[in-house]
Amino acid sequence: MVRLKHVMITACLFLLVTLTTQGQSRQERFEAIENQKTAYITKQLKLSPKEAQQFFPLYNQYRKEIRSVKQKKSKGIQSPGNQNSFRPGNDVIAFDSQEVNIKKKYREKFARVVGQSRASQFFAVEQEFIELLYKELNSRQRR
Image (cartoon, rainbow, N blue to C red):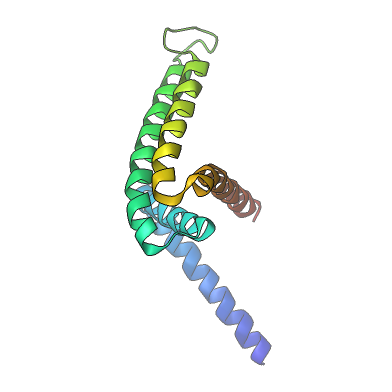
């Protein structure tokens, strides 16, 4: 009886979360993921409140610059019509180089706040979070 009650409560919570998630707009889901990412970075880098207060404005600038380059890269790669057409500005390596330069610039800025070791570790932590998101997405798609 207690076990059945536990299963029913769990099922109801799962249903509630699923319906809530489906009802969210794309922007709300993005913001929720960004909040989770912020918490993950804070935990993994063991940021103090003072460090977090200084780190995340820099992180937001970093994220905007990286997103801008990635958007330009995806627009340059996607060519309407012919998949094999070359257009000026499609140099993927140039976009990758820009991303690397941005990461180097921000690693120096992050190091001023959290030290060189954690500044370098940030990029691995960010990648770990992205991999966790992909795993979660894959597990949801299999259900």
